Length: 150
Image (cartoon, rainbow, N blue to C red):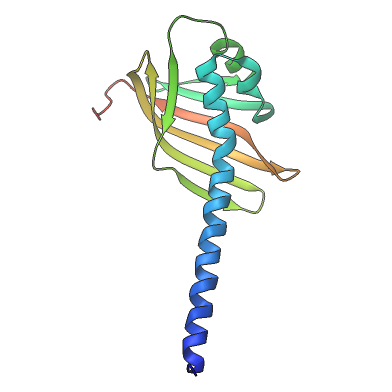
């Protein structure tokens, strides 16, 4: 028979791994609407850009120290127009914090035009969970041209 301590340690390890799996799956769930918005942008599909956000979600894009504010609807109409250039935004190393039905994602990004980095910076997403589904409430970003080469 194994000593009681072995079972206690095994139970503690199981609980810790279960919590980290829950955290990972919840982090993944928070990223779903962000990736959906990026997919909509790449497809230049205004409806797909707006779909993962609450109506009236706000955007503040910092360019050269000046904020450009708009609603998600205005952004979607601007980016969702057909164009010949291919666009894509990608984030990496996201910092995700969740408290009940509120989440924040802070992540460095690169914005590509025809496969080349056009600008980079940091994205900041505020999300809310309604009816069990994460939605974007606001987006802010910095945008600069002095992007490190990858």
